[in-house]
Length: 257
Image 1 (cartoon, rainbow, N blue to C red):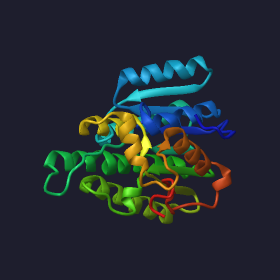
Image 2: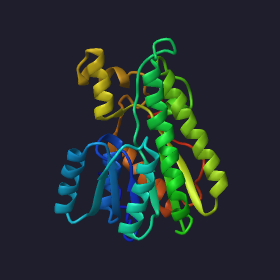
Image 3: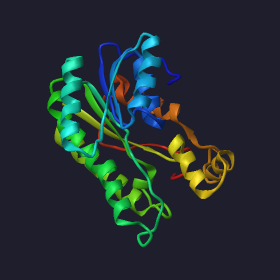
């Protein structure tokens, strides 16, 4: 959870990819900061576990499971969130996938899955929420991109392409919808999440070795935590960032400086 004392009472928040990693940290932080939060993810069981934990803490949270690559589900998700919470003020698009490979090594299935989840799903959600956000003064969309969308990374052709698309889509929306809706792409470097640890497992190395290797090129000498991503997202969604829109906020410990 965020270590900063933000207050989001009376704010209505939708978080995608909320059952793991950065999305879960963001969802928990908003809920504990007083917001009403609608969560979505693919796993019904993970969603139920998270909702049960937050409800016991007195948080106002709901969950609906589904596949963001399905446009109809995205429309239904937003309709359900608006009906339950009475509108929307903040949307965080955090769902994402990653496959390692050069252009020759990347399969059709991996390319299409990356684009469908990282780009298409985000587009469907943004398109569905925009009419509602325009009705809410000070509303904001936070799209989780990556520093791999700013500069290239080895063996991540599909991922780099998808995150570059997220950046440009966010910039375009920021210009189209200012001053009514702020749109901010968040660009993390490596973050200690189940996704990153899964990559280490695929490479046949333990988590500690993988985290140490990832930290070698970071001036801050460590990787980011999911809670630190949540801190930045809550700042960007707050009135303290009311004049920020369109420009990517990078949180990578100085790696791309």
